[in-house]
Amino acid sequence: MGRHFDNELRDLKFSLLAMAGLVEEMVELARQSFTERSDAKADRVIALDHNVDELELSLDQACIDLLALRAPFASDLRLLASTLKIVPELERIGDHCTNIAKRVKFISAYPHILTAQQIEALGEATHSMVKRAMDAFVNGDAELAKAVIADDDLVDEIYVQVSKDMLQIMLQDPSAIERASHLIILVKNWERIADQATNIAEEVLFILEGVNVKHPYLQKRES
Amino acid sequence: MDLNERPVIPEPVPTITEPPRAGEAHILSQQGTPLTDRAALEAPTMVSVKDLNLFYGRKQALHGINLEVGKNTVMALIGPSGCGKSTLLRCINRMNDLIDNVRIDGHVRVGQSDIYAPDVDVIGLRMRMGMVFQKSNPFPKSIYENVAYGLRVQGVKNRAVLDEAVERSLISAGLWDEVKDRLNESGLGLSGGQQQRLCIARALAVKPEVLLMDEPCSALDPLATSRIEELIFELKRDFTIVIVTHNMQQAARVSDFTAFFWMGKLIEVGLTEKLFTNPRERMTEDYISGRFG
Image (cartoon, rainbow over all chains, first blue to last red):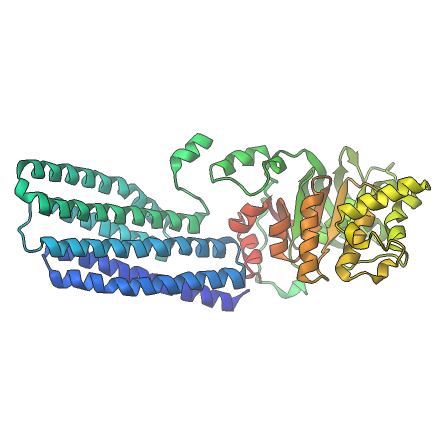
């Protein structure tokens, strides 16, 4: 196993980065579609999801083929095992972007309600997490991956606050219930994307350091 | 392989990691449940190699080896040709004594015995060590006599004792069902995989404490290899096993611990699943992932 396998791994990384690039574009378009009330951008997000699904299938197959044919060890094994987990995370991010885009199409005809800026902040923070998680993968940057994981708490805080605000709005103005319901689902999708970016960052740490950082409460209990 | 043709390889990192024991279990538990039986981590030492140097004439083949093998565990020795792994294996039953111009210093203990102590009975020592070689080497005798051979050398003549030992050993070697009706036929008439299991049965008959295997599957097809590997898994309940292999997958499949050697030096030793997923040394990583040299 030498140069040929290295080429195969390089091709796999390129394909993963192509998928990540596409997903990042969907995240950014989803964010803009809400901010700009753009149905065109929402439609573009929905259309891109098909391409992401196709890439998921081809990357899955490539990983299985390499595991079966190359029987890799050490960092090669970690890369393939983690790619098999990163790919579905990216695919799910694509699905969440599609959900956001669909909700945007529902609410785009109406004016922003009170928490629009917070929702935009949520979108920006989440987009940043996805982008930096993949940057950590590309650059082999463990510190950046750790920073992404830490940022998940900030996104959760925004999400909780937005949800509370939305509930308050619905209580105060029953005519806003339909829009607010769409927005609650929309922000939940942003929060899930941040979770998925966190999962990707955890996989990047496993690739780089061979350390599983998931579920720290279980590790504390064991120790 | 001419080792002198690889000048680009840097000198190995001198820090040699000790085999993980109880302390490592704590670290691993933070990383998830290890595949290795926890008992392997707590196993008392069966074979202990300390500061071992070996010279073939003026050429030093082993450099300050320190290695411990736990009782009822499997230790795989891996590394490129000429790295010293088979030489180390032969140190454990003093087979290197049979080679001219060999000089050894350091200590090898098996159980409580320092096997290089001046008063050691070498023949008696080798009876405590079963050895299985790369190429099966049954004697030109019947299957029964192949297995009974070691006991006969020890002077055992009681037929019932021999019968029991032959059956027990062939069962342990996973060969009994295939040969029980033809024990008087020549061992040379068996297939390659069966011959190797016959050799394992022969080694087991004298109830050794340690089983040394020098590339036992290198001449076997995948099916026969699989049977030997399953056998190793079974045998470690009763024996301590040290196996030399060039097959990385085999080392990963059968061993609890793996030691990587390069140019007569022990570069890294550790839990097999850790060494094959996240080795400490870059040189180990390059070797097991096929990027060496």
